[in-house]
Length: 490
Ligand code: G3H
Image (tube, rainbow, N blue to C red):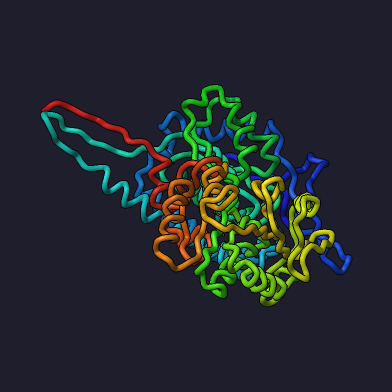
């Protein structure tokens, strides 16, 4: 049984006793069995507003214990938290495997990079503080410039990295003296529960409050209240819009947003087919394609399209499908119950408009499982051409000329999204042309390598509808502070 019915409010771990409507997620793997993977009760609007009250008291217009503490003191609290967090490693890996069906390897990576992220955040926050607390004298003015916390941060992370990406939304905020309300994702809530007592132990009451529940239920009332200073949100852009528009003074709301994405790979005529197909399969199917950085559209030059597609399909059919704890498993059940239906609709729409499933094992559905599927040729009238599928489908289109319409460059320029893209090829001229265009439209371009966020020292963020701001620890600690000047004539 999973401890999915607790939350942290004003330094107290509370247990739901009066909620009759817990949300239960069940996966149904191929063998017909049913496995309960997660359960949580929803915090009500009233509980969410109580948490906001607690955060507001802890902030106390910047006079609270936590915002007033020196960075070095806060670093001691965060370091002590980190030591305890590391002790949970095995438990957190297990919970990630159970709750969101992440393979053991990927779950281990998620926990370990979270540990690294906390460590980096502490380091960069202390460095930033060292750099900004000195005096400066110029033109008859002596001044001290400090970076101070902003206020009350409402943070929310996604189900696909429920620990790591939640932590990127709030650990830098907390470290720099802000107070936090964290809304944890519905799927992926359970890895947070063993951490509640750690937050309770290491941070002052009310400085960090952790709520489970539906974002659409609890975030609008929190915003309507008007006391939220900062929204740090990773998830769908429709949710971000629905949340933000509630704030009565949205012009003064600080934001860090990471949202939808449709990364594409452009495979040029002189690409190394083996290297490109390996990268595209890794980029397209890691964690079932449920990554913002997954490759979700492929443009391949027509001269190598057949050989490239053959190589991709062979590799995709070789991906092991199974449960998260099996060795070498690559494709696991989808933990969001409605997801297989959504994927089916994408496929049916493309098939109706003339596409074909290209790999032998593609297009098979179990209750919670979708076999990895390569589909093409993709054309502009299909939903898969523009919309984000966020699942184990790889759409492929071919092109004759980079600048043809429709074609890869026009697709990149007119896409609403701008997270990452990749280009595979060897001619400096053609590769350069693609890199140049991509760089203006996405946050990161990958050359002969699949899209991904890491290493986490690199700035990670999107353009257009994919986001605002970057989440690597160094930039994030800055983004949760504002410069504040005290000046006098000398
Ligand atoms: O889902 C969005 C994540 O930021 C992707 O991270 O590229 O390390 O899998 P990743």
